[in-house]
Length: 156
Image (cartoon, rainbow, N blue to C red):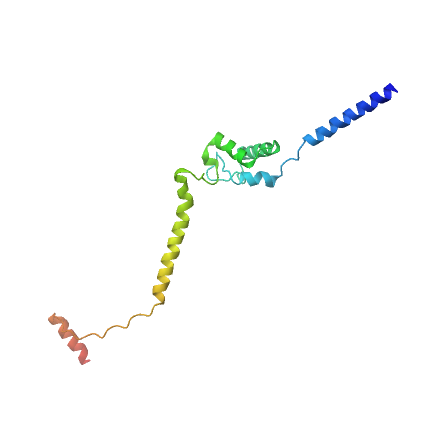
């Protein structure tokens, strides 16, 4: 009877360990999850190339690093902060909204609104009818040559 209880206890123990090991493993993050973060980061080596489309081996390693960080439970912001800490703010796809970087968010809409206003004003003036020209009064030309030329033209 004692062997039965010992075997049962060992079976429960191994079952519990196997269940805990299975629960501890999380599914590997998909490529879409990795690329969603990599799309917001730029390659620190290549100029102006998003991390999700950069073909270099270094970028492949950084995408794999993102996958590992996601599997470890890191959030998107933590991963971005890690890359900023390692490579500087130039790896961010959008500049952080502080300091003079606010201009990157404010200037384009202001310029677009100013352009729309200029077009609206231009369209409004184009739609207005032209004023009728006032009848010209024959003013004798002050130059003798011009006077003779106009007299010749009237004769024809």
